[in-house]
Length: 450
Image (cartoon, rainbow, N blue to C red):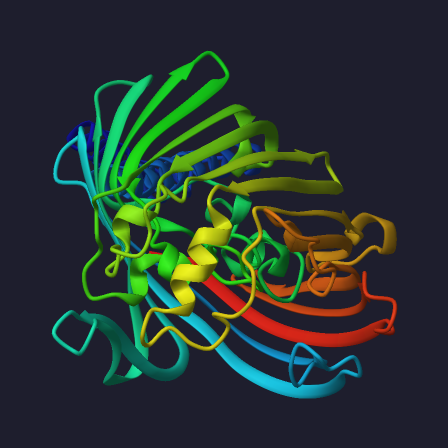
């Protein structure tokens, strides 16, 4: 294609030069009318040469894009918040504290060695803090957990994924991959959620942007998309009252125990990532087998999580919603076992919920056309709730952690790759002795790909 276009362009250029010479030779003998006609023909030829030149450059650009087999993606955010802080679980009078957080800087690398294969890695730098690794020392008295400071700056490898695409309907991912429970794995970049920070309600129940080592079979049929995963499971030694199973994520350990594996199934109708679809997810796994000190737990500690989610977008209006309902069997046994395991503190005295739930709905209205604004601007409202101790096995559940929040705010993009957010929120608590609180937040995020 390129040689042909080049030849045609050269031919027209030569012809144009010939026409110019011709004009010069006959200019003395032509009438004014003939001259004007020749000038118009000259301008037409110049336009055709310019058009062919543009097409040649476009063809070269498209060819380069088709030949490119790699991609670099990066995103990150910085946030300031003034939010209520309780000194301890008995405190009923919160005090607002201002905090600034370098939330994360993420670097993703994608490489496609062939039409069928793709390799993807993701490295996340969080909070600019100090990283620490947790390991289990079985030779220390009766077994003990030890924390080791390893480096300045917390660094997480969130993904090392190998993907094989058989055809448009069947593909498989394996390695350290995202677990598609909740919308957090789909909408985790700063421009993909309206609130100034990722949804706290999801983080109250499960690991946010959950990732495990395993395999994912993806199948498509018409507008249905099914994912079936077998991955590493959770460790119940770190289940807690305030965030249910979220802290049982084994990323805190140097190696992951894999005696108890997890099954995850997710079915979507439509395209969730393009903000038009609905679906559900189901997670199932035992957790006691992944304990380091498992001689004091004879029960399975089975976890199941049902998730419902949906996204809808029109020209100026976007709505996202999800609901998570979780169940933990043998929660009382796990609570008692954690009390007697050396190194597991604080919080071991508190009961772990046998049932927990959380959800959110957020709606954004793009006001550019309404107010004749050039840069993308969105007003939003979000309602979130979570209760990690909805029920307990053999006693009355506490309402202390039953919380909801109503937030209002704005998203503004001064340029395509930067989003500036602010929000005001009101928190409500199920405990009558705790008054409503309020918070304010600002964040700046970026995202780009090359």
